Length: 281
Ligand code: NDP
Image (cartoon, rainbow, N blue to C red; front, side):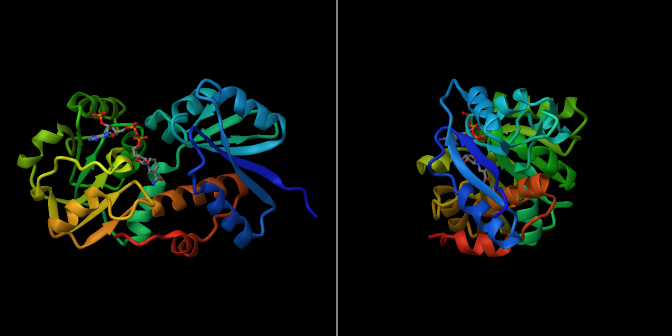
């Protein structure tokens, strides 16, 4: 039997991660000789855990909360996407001993929105809720899709404004990009796409959102997955939005991009998404 190449997801906590199941399905469908496990690193031990995994022959990792910033700092080479996001969700360990960092969260979201959900973002009004790592990670690919408006709204308004300023300073956002407080939203109009990139759904907390932000023929997207109909998705449905999605597709698409980056072939994602999907109710 061919020797297996080793990959893993490193986080804290990491027991809930679907990534090992997703990558096992990818290995099965592509016939690639890979194993993929979940490793919990101590909060103060990310670099030591990665070093140990590499010393044992590990070829690459995905990185999840709370280590995405540290993953960027760990790498010898950081892609433009990861630099703009200020965070990496994938590392590759090359045979020459170098470590490269990438961030596939944003392209995963975009592929889910455009390819799986059939949305065309050009000219759309987009509302991005949250200004943490997940929002930062998806901002560049969202801007590249040329929405007419991309409003970043956060509970702490200063963080939304700082995020917008950072991207404008990098030349990545023009007049379409603006920041706001959640309390500004009643005057903001309706949006074709409302993305929840806050952590509120993890604790089943509702955001103070006016009905008016949801265009009834629009799409509401919660980056959280596996939580069914979250308070955010329920708010959207009650406001008349018919199209609701959770973040499972984003997770599977970023996993496929990581796999392709490491192995040189992109696995099919539709059957994996269908296999892992839980109903939104
Ligand atoms: P961070 O901790 O970096 O940021 C959290 C954000 O959520 C901040 O903007 C914070 O606002 C806001 N927030 C938290 N609780 C509340 C609340 N009760 N009301 C209003 N705002 C709140 O987290 P991440 O950005 O890393 O992750 C955000 C979410 O995205 C998580 O749920 C995560 O699971 C999901 N995610 C999904 C992925 C996927 O592949 N589907 C990939 C990456 C993330 P403030 O600044 O005011 O504190």
